[in-house]
Length: 597
Image (tube, rainbow, N blue to C red; front, top):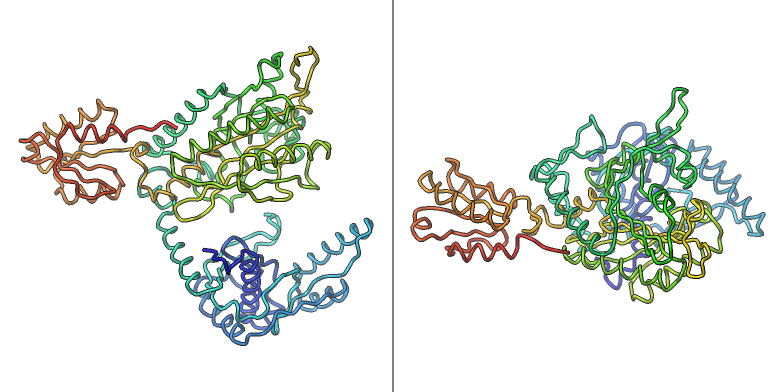
């Protein structure tokens, strides 16, 4: 939706500015609002913005008309956004007078960073403040010039959020909205949201009887028969593909001693996201695995390897557990128990060999994503200066290799500074679904660190011991998230090869059950997943039910079909096709019942 006259940085400024206007409007709901409404942060996000705040009572969508009225009044006044730089004491005094505790905490954090910067010779200029009308906020900006630019907006929803994402801190209200440069862009986005709500995988998961979620096991999926078929069919397809490409499948334990996680670095960098298991004294001594890589390091290390063995590709669809915060759980998109099409490739530290392996992986991307008509783009995540493991020189080398792979393969990418894994830079692949949304699925990471920490070696051609490097890769990512994306991408109308039920045979009356059963059995022999609906319901009701279940083909059997040995065919995608010779239909659906990546 971003037209040439709508560069993303302008939309970010527009939404950031609208968040300030919204915060001011919320203050107007309460007496002495700038003292009673305690503001936290209000950033722009993709297509939207939000502001976190502590308020005297919960905000609900019923409050939106009143908030929007105050927003429109400020927008109509067309006041400018004015930036000033205040000293720390000036800012503390101003926000303390208004009881803005979160702003005071932020000021302290900025001040601490300034002290560190000054020790490195960077000048300290105080804190950035923005005013728009009577509203003043701690903010580094940037913003648009005047409030009238923010007139095409809409408030969307409200949720809870912990201050700084810490469940031990204050519970805040998070109000979301969206803002666009033109009315047409706003309406297009709202229409897209309406369509997305219809396609919500949680809603369709219930309607299509694919899966359930229960509070007795939060963040874990109960796959129903149809959903289990999709899950297993997809995992078998990618398993077959990977085995044909030289991967060796392994299965590894769920629980590991803390010593393993300390060796890998996860105990230091990932412990808060792990399910820990305590001993009799209440000390955490082991954990459920959140990823497979340390286990694969043990497998590799258990055997002597020659350069002739490399690349050595291990594939694992084992169950993983991640201790996601309860408030972040969201259907299949964010779960605590998951499986990935996870693999680790042990390879010599040679740029050409690494590049060749990445090209093989990119070919796999094309085969898998191409089966679903999913275009993709890449984000290149680089080292986090505060959370990385190993030598800077090695990191720079790894990043240079990845960047050369992207350029040599002419892959469009953007750089995400500081978003790498703690052990190596990575490529995250975003697929673009049918609603024009980006969904992060695949990740490929280049790791020089774990082979070092696990002291992995192989015998080089000259007889010396060399250290391999490891490529971590998952193409679908978690099957749970990938299936959530597919449900919404297809609005539940899966391609025939992936549909749990590919065809339903319907009888007009009980007189035609024998012929309908013959048709069903013939289709079953062609490996078609077919059901027989010989209930006493009227044919219109049977058709409606099949359409609600997004079944690709419906075959109607009546007297004429029985006499002529034909079927009356209705297609989910094409509508009423009409009478078709039975053998002709079998030939048609046989071309669709299966697909190989």
